Amino acid sequence: MVGQLAISKAGHDKGSVYLVVREEETCVYLADGILKRYAAPKKKNKRHIQQIHSGLSAQEMEGLAQNPADADTNIKRYIKVFERNRFMNREV
Image (cartoon, rainbow, N blue to C red; front, side, top):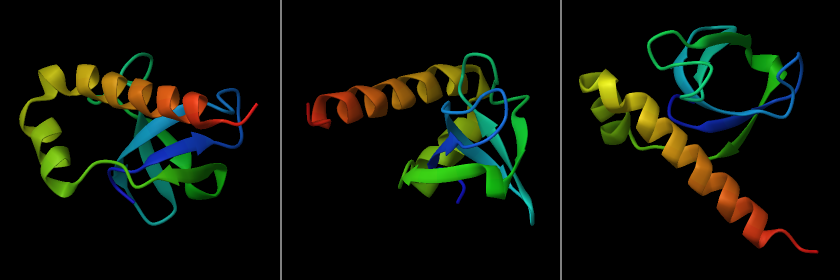
């Protein structure tokens, strides 16, 4: 699940898109690069998110870990591209 994009299904951030940066048994740690940074991700129960995209490869996730200064910029860019593609592909 690490490296996948997910949408929050519950809580005050319902509908927000995040990148899963870490995983434990019952919870995941999410970052959006804006309010929740890579260095201090949001802890959320796995039941309260919905996976929406395959996300980043293992190599790309290692790149984030090796260069945390650029991690937030890359996460923001990746989420923005995904949302733009989702909006453009939506049928009206």
